[in-house]
Image 1 (tube, rainbow, N blue to C red):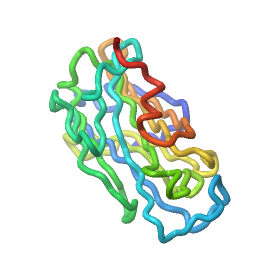
Image 2 (tube, one colour; image 1 turned 30 degrees about the vertical axis):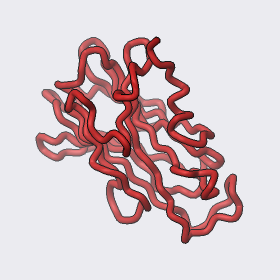
Image 3 (tube, rainbow, N blue to C red; image 1 turned 90 degrees about the vertical axis):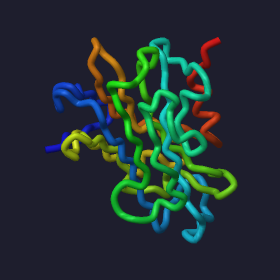
Length: 202
C-alpha cells in the first residue's frame, strides 16, 4: 500500500522498495471552476499549462549546467537516467498529467538531488496562479511491478498567489535514495526564475 506523505515528511526508497532502480514520477492536477486568487478575471476557457521539470543538483545544492535541467525543451538527460515523457498543455484527463522516468542506478555520481518542480507557463500573461488548481499530487511508482510507493497530495488553498511549486525531492543519503515531500510555493514568472534559487557551478 502506498504511503500518503505529509508536507515535510521523508521516506527511504530503499526501505519501502528494496532493490528499487527504475521509478516513474507522476504529477497531476485539475483546474478549479472558480477561485479568488491573485487574478480575479480568470476565464475557464483559457489553456492552463502546468510544466513539470526536474532540476539536478550536486552536493552543494548547485546545478552544473543547463543540461541538468529536464523539462519540455530538454526531455532527456544526457546520461539517459531521466526521461520526461512530454508536456501536457491543458491538464485535462484523469490520472497523471505528466510523467518522468528515473533510473536511479544510472544517475551520475555528481548528481546528489533531483528537485521536481511545477510552474505555470505564461502565468502572468494568462492571469493564472495555483489558487486555480485543485487535486494536485506527485506520486512515485516502482516500474519493476507498477506498484505505487508514495503519494503526496497538495492543498490548493495554500498556494493562492503562487505560480511555481517545488513538489518533492529525491536525494542521496548514505548511498541510499530518499524522497522528501516539499510543497513549497513561489511567486515566479517562469522556470528561469525558479532556477535562480540554485546557483550554477562557476
